[in-house]
Length: 461
Image (tube, rainbow, N blue to C red):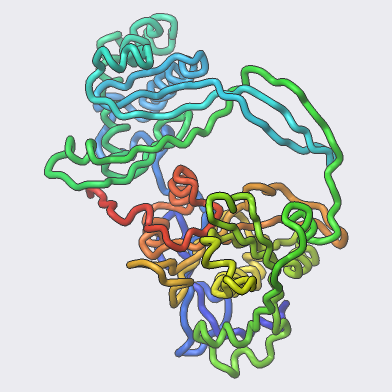
C-alpha cells in the first residue's frame, strides 16, 4: 500500500541486541504527530550464553582460558542434561532443584499439507529454589547433588580428566552454580544452561543478596525436547478455509458484532493531522466479534475480535499474509445487559489501528513474532496503571500458516499490556516478557482488571 507512504508518523524501533532507540522512518511525520514505540524481537538476545563465558561480570573459572571455559561449561551442561533426561532430579548446591517429569500431551506437526497429531510422553523440567538440602526435599525429589554427579562422571571424560583434577572440576562447578544464581537474581535472566533459560522477578527488596534470592520468583523456560513414548498417531489433510473467519464461526457460531474502524478518525486521535490522513487509500478496517461461552458457568465470557481483510497485502508481496486476533475476558453481567442487548466494548479498535500501522510498513509486513507497541493513551483504564500498550505474538491455538481461498496467512495475537511491562520488555526482551506472561497464563487473552505482573518487581542492580 505505497499510497499510504505519506502518513506522517515516526516509530521508534527498540532493537533487542542493544536496546538503543533508533529513529527509523517508517512514515514521514509532522512535528506535532504522536509517537508509537515499537520493541522488536527479530534481533539476537543481548543475554550471555555458554558461548560467552569470557564476558561475565566476573570470571567463572578464574584461571582458565576462554576455550577451556567453554569445554568445562559444555561438560557441566551435558551432565545436567543427561541426568534430567533420565528423570533424575539435579540439585544445584545453595541454589535449587532442576526437576524432571515425563508428561503426556498432544503434539501437532505438518508435512506436505498434512497435519500429524501425536499423543506423546515428553520431558518437562521445572525449577524450585532451595538453599539447604534437608530430609524433606530428599524424600520429595530424591535428588542427586551436582558435585556428586561430577565425581562419578569426571574420569570417563578424557578431554576433561587429562587436563583438570577432580578438585579443579569441583571448584569450577561451585563457580558455575554461583554464576547461575548471581546472574538470574541480579540481571533477571540467565542463559548459561543449554537446556533452558532461568528468569526471575523480585517480589520484595532486601539489604543482602540472600534477601534478594529469598524474594525472587524464579521461572525456568525449557529449550530442549525429549520424547519417551509416542502413541495414537493420526493424520488428516490441512483444511482450506473460505476466509479467516470460518474457524471462529465453526467454534463459536455467527459473529455477534461487526465493528467498522474508521482509520482516518482513529489516526487523528492517535496524533496525526487531518491533512496527513485525507488521502489514505484504506479508510475502513472491519473487525468481527465472536462470543466464547465456554466459561459462562463461571460468570465470564471471552470475546474474540478478528480481522478478515489484511492478509491480501502480505500475500501480494511475500506469498503469505497476516490477520489479527484480539481476545478479552469480560464479566457476563457487564457484557449481557438486562434488556437482552449485548454490550460490545469498542476500545480494542485502538489496538487494531496500532497493529495496522506496523503491518502497513513494508519491513514489518511479514509480522514476525514479537512486537510491543506503546500507545499515547491507555486502551482501557480500569486500575492504577491500566493497559497502555499492545504485544503482538503468535496466536497459539493456530500458530502455523493457515490455508485459505485467495492465499495463505498467519493469525497474530494482539494483547493489551501495562506500562511497566512495556518498560520491562525494553530493558530485557520481548521473549522475556512473553515467557513471564505465559507462566501466569496471561500471554494470549487480555484481562482488563489485572495488575502488572511486575508491579512490585525490583532489580538488584
